[in-house]
Image (cartoon, rainbow, N blue to C red; front, side, top):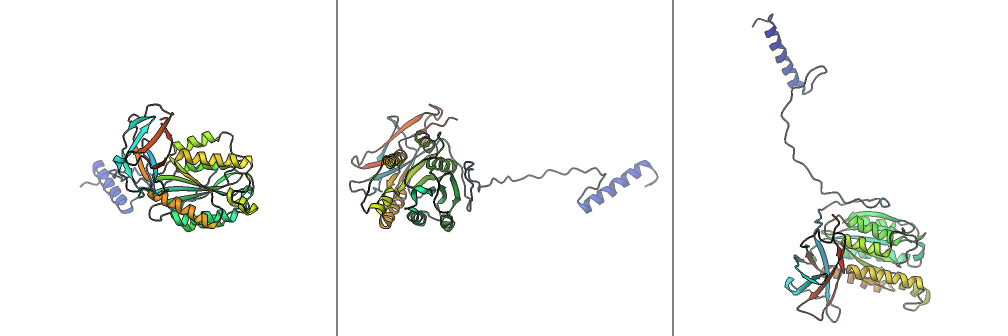
Length: 353
């Protein structure tokens, strides 16, 4: 090769440049990079993302398992009890009759207690519950230890006083939940209970599984956002498909003060009680009013048993675009046991989009 010719000089330059690039793996300043084939990438979609709570809540999430949600599915938790209040657990799909707005509707599927629970507890830490403070803490700890199944369920903890605050994001680690309870400051301030319920419902709205909210409180509300009326709270719960249970501490407080079961109730307490009843009635839950630790244990055992013995019916609207944003009434009957008591949610809202 004649190294003096322009072509030979160019070829030699290219060879030397390729050799330098191959050895260094880097393009030196002033050099033009030689494009290489674009490798195929396998896209990793993380399964460790929980929905963000409202701005007032700061999540602290230990376990991340999640979770896609079928927005068209309407889950319908159903508790069926005999005349003695015992759960009937032998029913099959053909035993149930579903009606939507009074019209027969097809049930897509039937599941039982194997369905994972995604649970949020609202712990009242306002000044109105000073008498019941230790009682509430014990209630919360015992509940998490009795109900949360570490291999299936996730639970979160909110405190409620003048503001609602997330203390522990969804986790299966019960010790983290207990630690969060033990770190609560002394009770003080007003009660933003409705704000806390809305925060918890919105937090659970994007996770798959049975969404359950357990409220440990006297049911009073004094400072929630004016927009969070009872009607707005119920709507939020129904849209999020959340079932509500209440461990009401009012009777415990009255018993401590008077020594009489029930004690004396003022108008404010009666209003709070009606609110708690309505929240549970509309969502298929229940209210428990223990007066001591023994009754507390029984209440939580009943909640635990009910969650384990529930039927979960799946309903897929024939036309999910029909009546967007409107409330549709749900009614359930057990055809083979007409005398059985049935407790379930009262309806759902058709998604707006």
